[in-house]
Length: 253
Image (tube, rainbow, N blue to C red):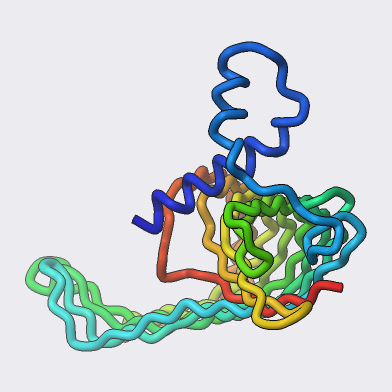
């Protein structure tokens, strides 16, 4: 159900960007009818033209498991996480419409101990990985006032993300030890619908979820200080994960 609500909010937010320039044809009239119940924003509201928003965001994705039998493999241990912290600021150049910039740091670390096809190939490995990354992300955020209230708003954020990360991985197959250094340069476009709830004057709590992502990555890999390889790939991701919600405290002034 949450996925469908976010899809609806995303559609509505995108549609409002073009509603004012709509012509008289039937499809545009249908869009106008769909949005006719959206309430207007008063100049004194926090999301009105001329206001500023700023705040931090914290995100954590964690996984942990042990002693699992997965048909063709045995998972002895899995322990890992991805932690992201960032700060952002934006300016409302129009009622309900803000442009801004965010920047942040991301840390990923995991350990996995497993065996694969024990009765046939008997592949057993311990893999460890750790990486640190940095990113900058300009964004355009459109707020919707669906209820006649100054407490709850829905929004959609369209953003363009540039990031770099450097990671070290180690693979131990109980005979050889392989180490690799990976550098990742990436570009990502995303849609992030969400909700803003004002807790007190000027302060609000926000939650959002990634709905659509298009990414392009260029990766270089150096193994044991000698072998070097390069990889370039592109991904279109329509998956919605309710386990990777972002939470923010935002100050409007």
